[in-house]
Amino acid sequence: MKQSHDSCRDLYECSCPELDLLVEICLRSGAVGSRLTRAGWGGCAVSVVPIDKVESFLKSVREVYYTPDPRRAELEKHSLFVSKPGGGAAIFLEY
Image 1 (cartoon, rainbow, N blue to C red):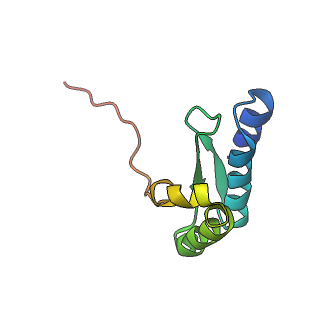
Image 2: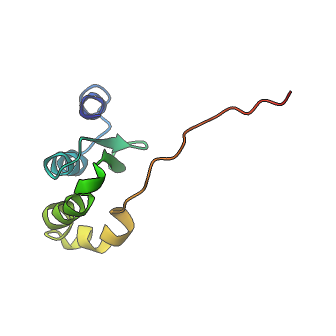
Image 3: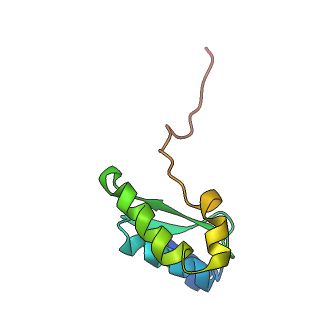
């Protein structure tokens, strides 16, 4: 995931300093992978975090990225959340 983020940043120039910072903070906070997602250019990041590290991850990202900046702090409740992976795409065939 990190290589993918770096590629988007370096080859396609579709990241921004804030998003690069967020990905680095996520990795330092316990994510095993983190990268920009959506269209980039200030979009959002997705991180893969082991279940036993989720609470400490959220606390760290909150304290290091969101809390110091009042603009970010206002967005936190809509921006920092946990989701579980789903089953993925599937094709249903009728016989």
